[in-house]
Length: 108
Image 1 (cartoon, one colour):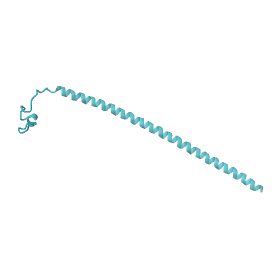
Image 2 (cartoon, helix red, strand yellow; image 1 turned 90 degrees about the vertical axis):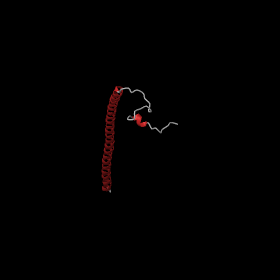
Image 3 (cartoon, one colour; image 1 turned 180 degrees about the vertical axis):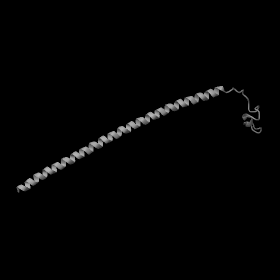
Image 4 (cartoon, one colour; image 1 turned 45 degrees about the vertical axis):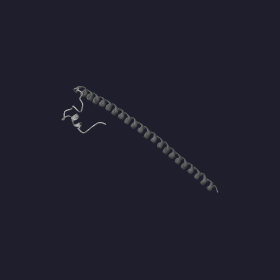
């Protein structure tokens, strides 16, 4: 009967050792997953900040380009000669206003 008690005590020690090993492996897995997800979150945040900085730089560059285009258009418009006012009825036939004229057209 003593051999049975000794076997049970020995089995209990083995069972505790196996449970302790499984608990350590489970804890390592849990903390490894947790730290891995925090690294992934940190990498995602860094990528998001980089994308946001790139978008901001592109928007600033587009604003500068739009201002340059507007300045060029306004400069060209200011350089155009002023045309005297004229009516469609008195416009020469070869001009755009002359093409608008139609002898059968009346305004009602």
